[in-house]
Image (cartoon, rainbow, N blue to C red; front, top):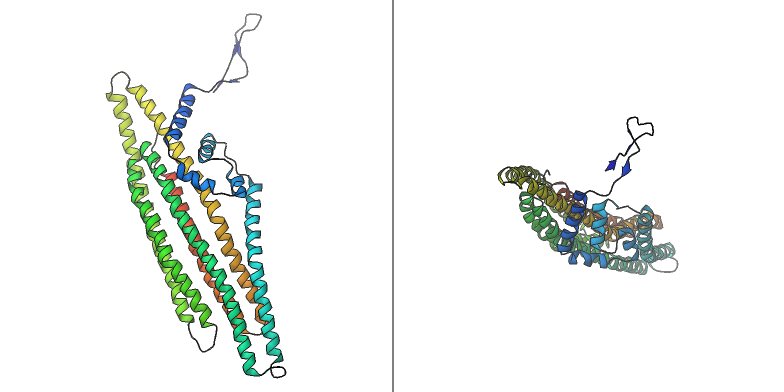
Length: 391
């Protein structure tokens, strides 16, 4: 806090105030800093550190700290700064890696489409119609094999991301809920504790065990249904895609509605409970009740600050973990759309149909991943904003 210094004039007139000077940190600020250090030293951040240790150089540059504890201290002290240069460089890097990864496959598909078109043009002069149909079917089959490999790898990456989000929840939320209870948010912690299990084991488990397999089945039916005009499977593929959307949308709506109502109610209850406890300490504890009440405020303030800092650190880890897979899906989707547009004038409609319909399927996959990450993000923000009793 700035303080003023009184200066007496030489002629004995009334003293005047000089410019304020910066004073040393107050005892309360020192005690709060010590309380925060004590809380951090007692926390078990090993599981969170494991995710940070798995980051590559670019991700560590964006994260901006060597450990979870350092990041939390930076957030608490207000020293956190987002390096926009590193952030945009990281986005361009993962987008470039994805483009280079899918470019050979897309070029191979276009080369096969051109070869099939040239064969159709020469049909009747250099080859019979039956031979042309066989080669055309073989070309479409080869394109299907290339796409199958890419879809399999993409689905494996998507599954890995969902499993990673589950592990992050299991690592982050026990720490946050412990700090929430320590800061007087026992009611909120009681609401969120079963909600964490529902989100991590329930919804994420449904995505891994049911929704992703439905996506694979839809992709298979999409490809097989376009191999020949005699095979009619488009409606079946559409059914599986619709089932994915309904399952995901219903689960998200119910979960967010439950959290919104229960979280607000618990937060109000915690605020009343904390005020009651502080009043009881200050009024009914003889002599030192007022001092104990202020110490109670200090402990709760430190716990709230650390809890919110852990939540913000988890948000950064979430974005850094999800961006590579989401960018890969987005680039693959755009590549399919572009390749379908280029292949359409080349003649064989089956190739462009397969590419365009698989692009729609991968759009659904992107929605699944973004929905899961967004649900985790909303949960983190809700935990940060609630469970903060009035101090």
